[in-house]
Length: 317
Image 1 (cartoon, helix red, strand yellow):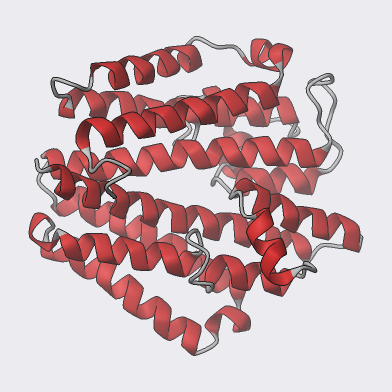
Image 2 (cartoon, one colour):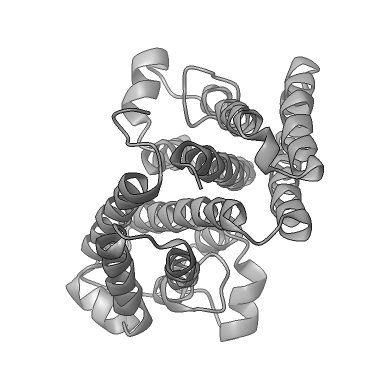
């Protein structure tokens, strides 16, 4: 496959996944903000959300004082923010349009209709009217896009590069959510077994990755930080866990490998093995923040390797 075609497909999927992840985080923060709590605690939650996306400085420069409505506007409608939902959906549509011939009609129409509909919904004020309903719609459209890809695309390189972009973005996002939320909760690495008395905080973390019901089914016990981390890092049967995402990345790289991708495959395989054979006690012993920081650096290196080996070089892009 031509590198430019692969690049467009890869980033189409990444931007779609990123829009969904942003909607998940915004929805959880919005729902949490409706609970009885101090203004300081509520503000910390919104700052943490900006930290996850590394957008604190950009927001502070544009708005100064933080309010819930400004954060939602910045993360949904602001086209100067490349990680806003609108920016992501537009980028996904533009990448899809560039490789229209590599997509089925159903995939193209799903991506294109999502972009057209989100513009109408924003113009009609549906975000202000019911933010949660809007966020659910974004998540639904992302689910629909993946389902249509899986149900209509030939399982060739085009399909594989879309899946590769999806799972690389998912792994990155899950690690960011865990890192920021654990620090914000006060569950520092020196005391990993401390019971978290704020049930709503950890329930919100789980709901941001569709893991609340899964947690109850797996553990059948009170929610604790250590079990949350184990579920979202080490459980291969949890769809959004780090190890589950890396299962897919390693398998896809094996299918699309070429003569120069050996080092990227090695890095991905080593990261996958480190996750597969890790224990949560060992992770907390070395420090969760250190572990997740290292993971984000390594997943970033793998993404750079994929760009170098298969896609348009980052400098050229």
